[in-house]
Image (cartoon, rainbow, N blue to C red):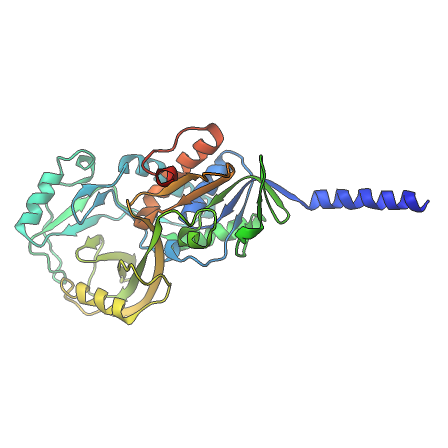
Length: 367
């Protein structure tokens, strides 16, 4: 009788343990722009997933949120800009509908010229492959007395601003309500890699995707890849007299947020890898701003985050060189709003259908 009871209890214990195991198609580590974009791809294809997020990375939240298909320093096209915009904008439009909020603001981006030479360079760039659809060749006169732009302005087409902070907040809340968000740090040493799955504590998954941003430096599976970090600091100012209804790009960006507030940025710092704001960065941004904004303003806020950047300025995406169920989605840099959904498509199609990832962004280029 005792043996029978022992066997019965053992069977019940095994069944309870079995049903306590969470089985999903994917584990996602990180809930910034990369993680969100990949989750949207999984949802569209009815894949189950769980997301780990510890809020240690700030770059997606504090970002200016611009999408702009032209590099305005040298007037060059952004890599695959047309494909990126075509992929990204419907994703954000759907998220607006899902959450009942406004995320995507269609705002023009105008480049302030400082010389006739820059004007000429603008016209020359308009004929380049990849730029013609996005450059307005009619220069815009500056009619704002509080902006110094005597050499006029050049306008970029198909631009806008995504409210990344609101997106991340709503997305995390939605995941939490559906039981798909685990708000804790991911312990890489607890991950067990098997032939056809990965196991993490009480979770079994077919695949795991690391979308940790600069947090990759703590990831023993991928930290040998050449992903650096570029710290960016931004200010929020209140300028009632400025009255800009477009994004102004000069030595810094000035991005209208509504109610006479503007985001000013950004810095590109290579040595400091913390999310701590500094007086030095604030002074630098203000000094640059005052060279072309001629009205009074008040600084309301300052934020900082470390962007995940790669030396060749392309993302790091793909499979681990040894573990076939481990994947990376990282290195979006300062253009995450535009590129994240495009890269999510690339990675998903690679995992599920073995479609090759664009060679320029495949992390195997560094193996």
